[in-house]
Length: 549
Ligand code: SF4
Image (cartoon, rainbow, N blue to C red; front, side, top):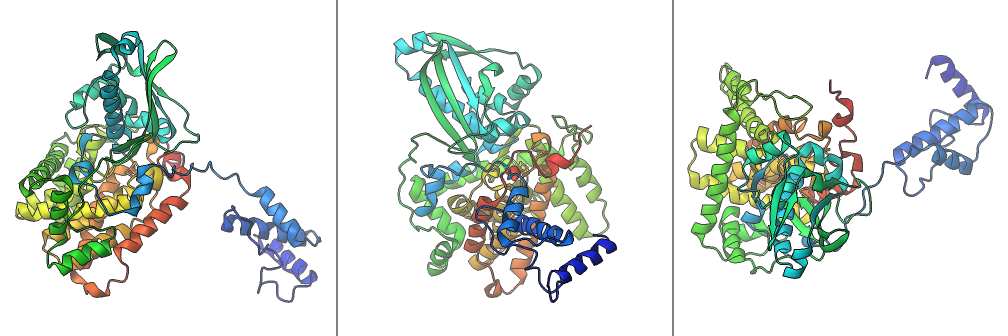
């Protein structure tokens, strides 16, 4: 507002019988906020309307101000449909945590657990069901068709969702698929593959994976359907949901029956009480629960954890070994930088600079592997696949910590991931990047604290701190590719995890003001309130402001 206008406004306000126009804006704004509108935007519009009326010598009633303000409010972005109440991912927060390590840590192709690993698991699952159709139906089958909806359709192209979906349909599982097969689908998209259904062989290609409606009344933002058709007749159809972190559900899904946990917990408060009352670590509580829920021996639990640790180390090594000028797939033409950052960090003068540089490089390395569509580990997701491996690699390969300490750290990290999944979300399509990098960083902080033998309160505090300082972080991948901001974001997630551990292990633990459960609740509420444009749609934020040329 220029000075002349400013004076004129004050004059009008005085004439409008305001004793002190600068002391109150009541004369200008409507004090009642109508339901369903953004408070800040409404108040601004209302004030502008009121001031404009005063400036031109009109008086304006409260009702008129409200009506005018409402009429000039910008169109709200399409609200994301609420998640259906009957999805297990919604109901889950009610009972004790029953997730197991092999459900959580999944190996599969990047770049996105919800857009590649989930869809591949879905089409693989459907393929198994289709083979069980009666022989007479199979004899009439002519076509297999996949339809992608919601976020899977909006950003699936950038994630290679169609390639992942086709790979599952032709019988590939995420953990064992050769990334070169997925690369070949990208390089030669017209290939066809025979799918054996009984005595019948049906040819499928990428054309059978359809990018369908991006908006609609879906049970979950990541919805897809898979069908067996005989001409136009549907012989078998299933609706599926990729609910985050590679977890999948389908219409009518009921979770598998599991044994009760030895130490049931729903909240961190209860988990820590088990640890403290029994004088064992959080990791030992988790180990006991893994054994009782899944009916496994200690050796079997650790064998699985070792497999995941080895895969994490391998992904960092593979990323660091890529040529310095490697260019990642996609329109961003992003040069990989993990190897360069690592090499240059090693020349830094101060040990602390070297440490931060190296930790960042490890995260960049694993995350760039994700961007290449190579095998990564969901901890908790593909987009955040650089965070935990960076800490695992640093603790094991650089600090040379005892492997058993890192195993226990992996178990404590699971507790964090489970609780976030149980009460909030791991899906960027539901909660933005706070649900991916935020949870990953929180898990990595718990891993580090546990590996360094911290008491349970310090483990909680470290995890809380790392999660707290990611709250509100949006998901806005440029061009729909999990590269910018995702790759660097993994490096920041790893460094923040270390910072959270550094603070938690050096502060007076009992004085830490915010408890983990409160922060998870904030994560869940922030996820609900976040504008849908910032939930993996590539419609806002960096996805809009960065220009590709
Ligand atoms: S911005 Fe964050 S949540 Fe979104 S794709 Fe990238 S890493 Fe995942």
